[in-house]
Length: 94
Picture (spheres, rainbow, N blue to C red):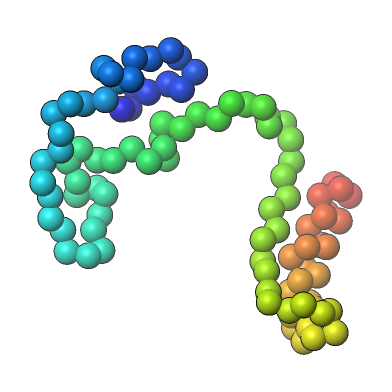
C-alpha cells in the first residue's frame, strides 16, 4: 500500500493484496519492524491536504479533574497557567 494516494481515483478491488498475510507470532511487546510485510500506519506515506499550510496551531490538552478553581493547588494553578495562557501570549506576541 506504499503507493496509495488518497487524492487519486483508485479501484479498491485491486488496491489491496489478496494473498493474505503469513501467520506471525511475537512475544509481547511485538515490533512492527519484525512483521512481514511491515505495516504502513502512515508515518511515511501520509500526505495532508495542505489546507492548514502556513497557519499556526496551539494544542493545549492537559486536563485535570478539578471542578472549581479554588480547589487548585499553587502548583496545579502554575501548570495550568503555563499550559494554557503563556503559549497563547507568545503565539500572538511573536
